[in-house]
Image 1 (cartoon, rainbow, N blue to C red):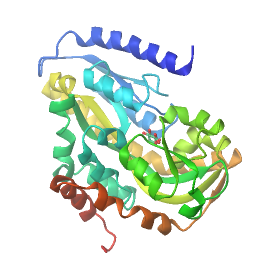
Image 2 (image 1 turned 45 degrees about the vertical axis):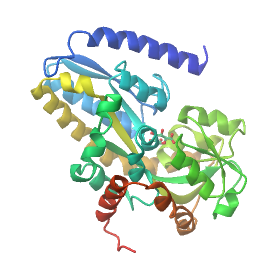
Image 3 (image 1 turned 30 degrees about the horizontal axis):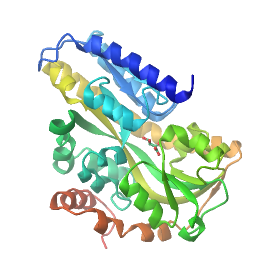
Image 4 (image 1 turned 120 degrees about the horizontal axis):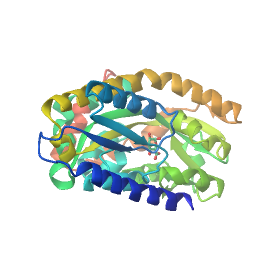
Length: 340
Ligand code: GCU
Protein backbone atom coordinates (compact mmCIF):
# COMPACT_ATOMS: atom_id res chain seq x y z
CA UNK A 1 0.00 0.00 0.00
CA UNK A 2 1.32 3.49 -0.84
CA UNK A 3 2.00 5.99 1.87
CA UNK A 4 -1.09 8.04 1.12
CA UNK A 5 -3.38 5.01 0.88
CA UNK A 6 -1.98 3.74 4.18
CA UNK A 7 -2.58 7.10 5.79
CA UNK A 8 -6.17 7.19 4.61
CA UNK A 9 -6.78 3.63 5.74
CA UNK A 10 -5.36 4.52 9.14
CA UNK A 11 -7.52 7.63 9.24
CA UNK A 12 -10.62 5.60 8.41
CA UNK A 13 -9.74 3.14 11.17
CA UNK A 14 -9.20 5.91 13.66
CA UNK A 15 -12.47 7.49 12.59
CA UNK A 16 -14.35 4.34 13.46
CA UNK A 17 -12.52 3.99 16.77
CA UNK A 18 -13.11 7.62 17.61
CA UNK A 19 -16.77 7.47 16.70
CA UNK A 20 -17.24 4.47 18.95
CA UNK A 21 -15.26 6.03 21.77
CA UNK A 22 -17.05 9.37 21.54
CA UNK A 23 -20.57 8.09 21.39
CA UNK A 24 -21.16 7.89 25.19
CA UNK A 25 -21.71 11.58 25.71
CA UNK A 26 -20.99 14.90 24.12
CA UNK A 27 -23.31 16.57 26.60
CA UNK A 28 -21.53 19.64 27.93
CA UNK A 29 -19.74 18.84 31.18
CA UNK A 30 -20.98 15.23 31.39
CA UNK A 31 -18.29 13.13 29.72
CA UNK A 32 -16.09 11.43 32.28
CA UNK A 33 -13.56 9.78 30.03
CA UNK A 34 -12.42 9.13 26.49
CA UNK A 35 -9.43 8.69 24.24
CA UNK A 36 -8.09 11.77 22.50
CA UNK A 37 -6.64 10.82 19.12
CA UNK A 38 -3.99 13.36 18.21
CA UNK A 39 -2.76 13.90 14.64
CA UNK A 40 0.85 14.99 14.26
CA UNK A 41 3.04 15.22 11.17
CA UNK A 42 6.36 14.86 13.02
CA UNK A 43 8.43 11.85 14.07
CA UNK A 44 8.50 10.32 17.57
CA UNK A 45 11.84 12.01 18.32
CA UNK A 46 10.58 15.53 17.54
CA UNK A 47 10.15 17.86 20.57
CA UNK A 48 6.43 18.21 19.76
CA UNK A 49 5.88 14.46 20.08
CA UNK A 50 7.82 14.29 23.35
CA UNK A 51 5.98 17.29 24.83
CA UNK A 52 2.57 15.96 23.78
CA UNK A 53 3.38 12.58 25.23
CA UNK A 54 4.14 14.28 28.55
CA UNK A 55 0.71 15.91 28.36
CA UNK A 56 -0.94 12.52 27.82
CA UNK A 57 0.91 11.05 30.80
CA UNK A 58 -0.20 13.90 33.03
CA UNK A 59 -3.80 13.62 31.92
CA UNK A 60 -3.94 9.85 32.41
CA UNK A 61 -2.21 10.04 35.81
CA UNK A 62 -4.44 12.79 37.14
CA UNK A 63 -7.71 11.28 35.93
CA UNK A 64 -6.93 7.71 36.95
CA UNK A 65 -6.72 6.71 33.27
CA UNK A 66 -10.22 7.97 32.39
CA UNK A 67 -8.76 10.33 29.79
CA UNK A 68 -5.82 9.40 27.59
CA UNK A 69 -4.08 10.83 24.53
CA UNK A 70 -3.04 8.58 21.63
CA UNK A 71 -0.58 10.36 19.38
CA UNK A 72 -0.49 9.40 15.69
CA UNK A 73 2.83 10.77 14.36
CA UNK A 74 4.24 10.92 10.80
CA UNK A 75 1.00 12.02 9.14
CA UNK A 76 -0.60 8.61 9.79
CA UNK A 77 -3.96 10.38 10.14
CA UNK A 78 -3.28 12.44 7.01
CA UNK A 79 -1.42 15.63 6.22
CA UNK A 80 -2.30 18.73 8.25
CA UNK A 81 -5.10 19.96 5.98
CA UNK A 82 -6.85 16.59 6.33
CA UNK A 83 -6.14 16.38 10.06
CA UNK A 84 -7.72 19.79 10.56
CA UNK A 85 -10.85 18.62 8.76
CA UNK A 86 -10.97 15.47 10.89
CA UNK A 87 -10.82 17.58 14.07
CA UNK A 88 -13.56 19.81 12.73
CA UNK A 89 -15.92 16.89 12.08
CA UNK A 90 -14.98 15.21 15.37
CA UNK A 91 -13.43 12.04 13.91
CA UNK A 92 -10.15 13.04 15.52
CA UNK A 93 -10.12 15.16 18.66
CA UNK A 94 -6.73 16.85 18.60
CA UNK A 95 -4.12 17.94 16.07
CA UNK A 96 -1.03 20.05 15.71
CA UNK A 97 -1.29 22.23 12.63
CA UNK A 98 0.92 24.96 11.29
CA UNK A 99 -0.23 28.60 11.20
CA UNK A 100 -0.92 28.67 7.45
CA UNK A 101 -3.57 25.94 7.84
CA UNK A 102 -5.61 28.13 10.18
CA UNK A 103 -5.16 31.13 7.92
CA UNK A 104 -7.13 29.09 5.36
CA UNK A 105 -10.09 28.97 7.79
CA UNK A 106 -9.88 32.52 9.13
CA UNK A 107 -7.67 35.12 7.50
CA UNK A 108 -7.16 36.85 10.86
CA UNK A 109 -4.52 34.21 11.64
CA UNK A 110 -2.35 35.91 9.02
CA UNK A 111 -1.54 38.52 11.67
CA UNK A 112 0.50 35.87 13.51
CA UNK A 113 1.89 34.20 10.36
CA UNK A 114 3.62 37.20 8.84
CA UNK A 115 7.41 37.10 8.64
CA UNK A 116 7.58 40.41 10.50
CA UNK A 117 5.29 39.45 13.42
CA UNK A 118 7.84 37.91 15.79
CA UNK A 119 11.47 38.84 16.48
CA UNK A 120 12.37 35.58 18.15
CA UNK A 121 11.02 32.59 20.04
CA UNK A 122 10.72 34.38 23.39
CA UNK A 123 8.71 37.17 21.81
CA UNK A 124 6.46 34.66 20.07
CA UNK A 125 5.83 32.64 23.22
CA UNK A 126 4.89 35.77 25.16
CA UNK A 127 2.30 36.68 22.54
CA UNK A 128 0.71 33.37 21.66
CA UNK A 129 -0.36 32.67 25.22
CA UNK A 130 -1.46 36.22 26.01
CA UNK A 131 -5.24 35.91 25.82
CA UNK A 132 -5.65 39.69 25.67
CA UNK A 133 -4.05 39.54 22.20
CA UNK A 134 -5.12 36.12 20.93
CA UNK A 135 -8.17 35.11 22.99
CA UNK A 136 -10.82 36.06 20.44
CA UNK A 137 -8.78 34.68 17.58
CA UNK A 138 -8.45 31.31 19.31
CA UNK A 139 -12.19 30.95 19.78
CA UNK A 140 -13.05 32.37 16.35
CA UNK A 141 -13.35 28.94 14.73
CA UNK A 142 -15.75 27.46 17.29
CA UNK A 143 -19.01 28.49 15.60
CA UNK A 144 -17.83 27.95 12.05
CA UNK A 145 -15.63 24.87 12.34
CA UNK A 146 -16.17 23.40 15.81
CA UNK A 147 -12.47 23.95 16.50
CA UNK A 148 -10.86 25.58 19.54
CA UNK A 149 -7.25 26.70 19.47
CA UNK A 150 -5.45 26.15 22.77
CA UNK A 151 -2.10 27.71 21.99
CA UNK A 152 1.08 26.86 20.25
CA UNK A 153 4.54 25.38 19.99
CA UNK A 154 7.26 27.37 18.32
CA UNK A 155 8.67 26.26 14.99
CA UNK A 156 11.75 28.36 15.66
CA UNK A 157 13.35 30.37 12.89
CA UNK A 158 12.74 29.08 9.40
CA UNK A 159 15.49 29.27 6.79
CA UNK A 160 15.92 28.23 3.16
CA UNK A 161 17.67 25.05 2.04
CA UNK A 162 18.33 23.88 -1.46
CA UNK A 163 19.56 21.08 -3.63
CA UNK A 164 21.67 23.44 -5.74
CA UNK A 165 23.81 25.62 -3.46
CA UNK A 166 23.76 28.44 -0.92
CA UNK A 167 21.27 31.31 -1.18
CA UNK A 168 22.80 34.59 -0.11
CA UNK A 169 20.17 36.90 -1.57
CA UNK A 170 16.73 36.56 -3.16
CA UNK A 171 18.46 36.74 -6.58
CA UNK A 172 19.81 33.23 -5.94
CA UNK A 173 16.24 31.94 -5.78
CA UNK A 174 15.19 33.44 -9.10
CA UNK A 175 13.32 30.86 -11.14
CA UNK A 176 13.86 28.13 -8.54
CA UNK A 177 10.89 26.12 -7.33
CA UNK A 178 10.56 26.71 -3.60
CA UNK A 179 8.23 24.44 -1.64
CA UNK A 180 5.96 26.40 0.69
CA UNK A 181 3.24 25.53 3.16
CA UNK A 182 -0.22 25.63 1.63
CA UNK A 183 -1.51 29.19 2.00
CA UNK A 184 -1.83 32.40 0.07
CA UNK A 185 0.59 34.22 2.37
CA UNK A 186 3.21 31.51 2.00
CA UNK A 187 2.91 31.61 -1.78
CA UNK A 188 3.35 35.39 -1.66
CA UNK A 189 6.38 34.98 0.60
CA UNK A 190 8.12 32.72 -1.91
CA UNK A 191 7.29 35.12 -4.71
CA UNK A 192 8.59 38.09 -2.72
CA UNK A 193 11.84 36.14 -2.40
CA UNK A 194 11.96 35.80 -6.17
CA UNK A 195 11.18 32.08 -6.25
CA UNK A 196 8.53 30.12 -8.03
CA UNK A 197 6.16 28.99 -5.25
CA UNK A 198 5.16 25.34 -5.00
CA UNK A 199 2.70 24.58 -2.18
CA UNK A 200 3.01 20.99 -0.99
CA UNK A 201 2.23 18.91 2.11
CA UNK A 202 5.13 18.36 4.48
CA UNK A 203 5.19 14.57 4.11
CA UNK A 204 5.58 14.83 0.35
CA UNK A 205 8.58 17.10 0.47
CA UNK A 206 11.37 14.55 0.74
CA UNK A 207 10.36 12.85 -2.49
CA UNK A 208 9.54 16.24 -4.01
CA UNK A 209 13.13 17.36 -3.47
CA UNK A 210 14.53 14.01 -4.50
CA UNK A 211 12.59 13.93 -7.77
CA UNK A 212 13.35 17.58 -8.54
CA UNK A 213 9.66 18.59 -8.35
CA UNK A 214 11.04 21.37 -6.14
CA UNK A 215 14.58 22.75 -5.90
CA UNK A 216 14.37 24.27 -2.45
CA UNK A 217 12.35 24.42 0.75
CA UNK A 218 12.31 26.37 3.99
CA UNK A 219 11.95 25.14 7.54
CA UNK A 220 13.69 24.90 10.89
CA UNK A 221 16.75 22.75 11.62
CA UNK A 222 14.73 20.21 13.61
CA UNK A 223 12.48 19.38 10.66
CA UNK A 224 15.41 19.51 8.24
CA UNK A 225 17.14 16.79 10.23
CA UNK A 226 14.19 14.69 11.43
CA UNK A 227 12.70 14.51 7.92
CA UNK A 228 16.22 13.85 6.54
CA UNK A 229 15.78 16.56 3.93
CA UNK A 230 19.54 17.23 4.13
CA UNK A 231 20.04 14.04 2.13
CA UNK A 232 18.33 15.59 -0.88
CA UNK A 233 18.93 19.32 -0.24
CA UNK A 234 22.32 19.65 1.47
CA UNK A 235 22.76 23.45 1.32
CA UNK A 236 21.27 25.32 4.25
CA UNK A 237 21.37 29.14 4.30
CA UNK A 238 20.47 31.01 7.48
CA UNK A 239 17.86 33.34 5.96
CA UNK A 240 15.93 33.32 9.28
CA UNK A 241 13.00 34.80 7.41
CA UNK A 242 10.22 33.75 9.77
CA UNK A 243 9.55 32.55 13.31
CA UNK A 244 6.93 29.89 12.61
CA UNK A 245 4.14 28.69 14.85
CA UNK A 246 2.32 25.39 15.31
CA UNK A 247 -1.13 25.39 16.93
CA UNK A 248 -2.80 22.80 19.08
CA UNK A 249 -6.41 22.48 17.96
CA UNK A 250 -9.16 20.55 19.72
CA UNK A 251 -12.70 19.65 18.72
CA UNK A 252 -14.83 22.19 20.61
CA UNK A 253 -17.69 19.78 21.43
CA UNK A 254 -15.32 17.24 22.93
CA UNK A 255 -13.61 19.93 24.99
CA UNK A 256 -16.97 21.20 26.24
CA UNK A 257 -18.09 17.66 27.06
CA UNK A 258 -15.38 17.26 29.72
CA UNK A 259 -16.28 17.87 33.34
CA UNK A 260 -14.94 21.14 34.65
CA UNK A 261 -12.41 19.39 36.89
CA UNK A 262 -11.10 17.23 34.02
CA UNK A 263 -10.87 20.25 31.75
CA UNK A 264 -8.68 21.94 34.35
CA UNK A 265 -6.34 18.93 34.39
CA UNK A 266 -6.33 18.93 30.59
CA UNK A 267 -5.34 22.63 30.55
CA UNK A 268 -2.67 22.05 33.19
CA UNK A 269 -1.20 19.21 31.12
CA UNK A 270 -1.15 21.38 28.03
CA UNK A 271 0.81 24.02 29.94
CA UNK A 272 3.24 21.33 30.96
CA UNK A 273 3.58 20.29 27.31
CA UNK A 274 4.29 23.87 26.26
CA UNK A 275 6.95 24.30 28.91
CA UNK A 276 8.51 20.96 27.95
CA UNK A 277 8.58 21.98 24.30
CA UNK A 278 10.34 25.27 25.02
CA UNK A 279 12.88 23.45 27.19
CA UNK A 280 13.62 20.86 24.51
CA UNK A 281 13.69 23.16 21.51
CA UNK A 282 17.14 24.72 21.76
CA UNK A 283 18.99 21.45 22.37
CA UNK A 284 16.99 19.75 19.61
CA UNK A 285 18.03 22.52 17.21
CA UNK A 286 21.71 22.09 18.08
CA UNK A 287 21.49 18.33 17.73
CA UNK A 288 19.72 18.68 14.39
CA UNK A 289 22.58 20.74 12.99
CA UNK A 290 25.07 18.06 14.04
CA UNK A 291 22.95 15.28 12.52
CA UNK A 292 22.57 17.17 9.25
CA UNK A 293 26.27 18.04 9.08
CA UNK A 294 27.22 14.42 9.73
CA UNK A 295 24.89 13.54 6.89
CA UNK A 296 26.71 15.87 4.49
CA UNK A 297 24.85 19.18 4.91
CA UNK A 298 26.59 22.56 4.93
CA UNK A 299 25.19 25.46 6.96
CA UNK A 300 25.91 28.89 5.44
CA UNK A 301 25.62 32.17 7.35
CA UNK A 302 24.10 34.82 5.08
CA UNK A 303 22.86 38.39 5.56
CA UNK A 304 19.32 37.75 6.82
CA UNK A 305 18.38 41.43 6.59
CA UNK A 306 18.06 41.31 2.78
CA UNK A 307 15.42 38.60 3.09
CA UNK A 308 13.62 40.49 5.80
CA UNK A 309 13.51 43.62 3.64
CA UNK A 310 12.01 41.68 0.75
CA UNK A 311 9.26 40.35 3.01
CA UNK A 312 8.45 43.52 4.93
CA UNK A 313 5.79 44.84 2.49
CA UNK A 314 3.63 41.74 3.06
CA UNK A 315 2.13 43.12 6.28
CA UNK A 316 0.60 46.12 4.52
CA UNK A 317 -0.64 43.93 1.73
CA UNK A 318 -2.17 41.10 3.78
CA UNK A 319 -3.58 42.91 6.80
CA UNK A 320 -6.80 44.35 5.47
CA UNK A 321 -9.11 44.71 8.49
CA UNK A 322 -9.03 46.49 11.82
CA UNK A 323 -9.16 43.18 13.70
CA UNK A 324 -6.11 41.89 11.83
CA UNK A 325 -4.16 45.06 12.56
CA UNK A 326 -5.18 44.91 16.21
CA UNK A 327 -3.77 41.39 16.57
CA UNK A 328 -0.62 42.28 14.65
CA UNK A 329 -0.04 45.49 16.61
CA UNK A 330 -0.76 43.62 19.86
CA UNK A 331 1.91 41.09 18.91
CA UNK A 332 4.41 43.75 17.85
CA UNK A 333 3.83 45.65 21.11
CA UNK A 334 5.32 42.70 23.01
CA UNK A 335 8.60 43.04 21.07
CA UNK A 336 11.56 44.16 23.10
CA UNK A 337 13.40 45.37 20.01
CA UNK A 338 13.43 49.11 19.39
CA UNK A 339 10.55 49.96 17.06
CA UNK A 340 11.06 51.51 13.67
C1 GCU B 1 7.35 22.65 10.57
C2 GCU B 1 6.11 22.68 11.42
C3 GCU B 1 5.03 21.80 10.83
C4 GCU B 1 4.79 22.16 9.38
C5 GCU B 1 6.09 22.10 8.61
C6 GCU B 1 5.89 22.47 7.14
O1 GCU B 1 7.94 21.39 10.65
O2 GCU B 1 6.43 22.30 12.73
O3 GCU B 1 3.83 21.95 11.52
O4 GCU B 1 3.86 21.30 8.81
O5 GCU B 1 7.03 22.95 9.21
O6 GCU B 1 6.72 23.19 6.60
O7 GCU B 1 4.90 22.03 6.55
